[in-house]
Structures are given as C-alpha cells and as structure tokens.
Figure: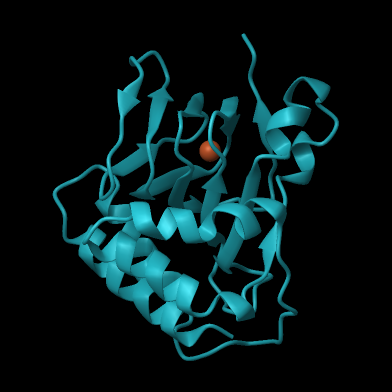
Length: 205
Ligand SMILES: [Fe+2]
C-alpha cells in the first residue's frame, strides 16, 4: 500500500504548490483532493518491462529535491507497486506501437486507485531511452515534475526545451505536447486534473 510513497507525494506537492510557477495552483489542488488518511482498497502489485529494466537506473538520475525524494520513496516500496502499460486510448494507433512498448505508468492516486483522489490522477512515469512520446492532447490540464533523466519537452508552438530534474511543466487543457528521450531513460511525476475519465489522443498534424 506504499505509505512512504504517498507521504513523499504530499511533501512534494506542498513544495511545488509553494513555488512561483504556473502549475503551483494545480499542486495545491492535489494536496486538497487526495485522501491522505489511508488506502481505500487493496491493489495487487504488478510490474512492467520498462519498470523492471529502468527504475533502478532512473533513481541514479534523480536530483536532490522533493521530486527525487518521491522517486526514491517509491523505489524503496517497489515490491508493493502496481505498474500499468500505456493508455488504452492509444492502443489502436499503429504509428505509436513502438513507443507504447517503451512506457510504464505507476498510478499513485486516483478515483479508482487504492489511494483515493477526487477527479484527478497522480502517477509516476518511466519513458525508456531513445523514445519519442508523439504529440498528444487531452481535455485534462496536466502537470509534470521532472524527477530524473535526460529528455526534451515540447509544448504547443514553443521550441524543444531541456528539462532537468526538479523542473515543473504545465500543460493547459487541450494543448499539444510531446517528449523525446536521448541516451537516458526519463522518470517523471504526472498529474491529470478534472475529467480524468476522458482519453488522451495522439495529434499528428
Ligand atoms: Fe499529457
């Protein structure tokens, strides 16, 4: 039931909510909407190839900041975690089939999770090396926190940007975004806020 991970999640969100950043109010919503009192149901641990292969490597890439602390807490409870594959809404898109194999998601809290959060989901994601997360968009606004690894991020019409450990990234509702890794895997915190039952879709043009 990974209590140390959830405690580290709360600490990280309080830290991010106190930053002067466009995503700070989103982190405050996480603090407000997660039921921190305890798990509401059981969850069977489950692993995925990307987690087996890269979780340990990713820990070595994390910074000395609350995002890194969250990754390290999750790693210390790795036998209790339930990893998932890529979103089901992507599964019919053969153009991204190779990428879907290079991604793993660990849901921390959600409306359906063992730790409850109200209409938002929090997660840790691992993206393997030399993997392109193609441009996609979704109704939910989204915040990312870079835990560790070498990657470039693109948001809307902005240029590609390096995002080091500790960086916060905000995606407003509907904006197109993509992520490219290089020689290192990427581990990041991700949160969807509002309408979490709606799918994410690839946007190729
Ligand atoms: Fe997204």
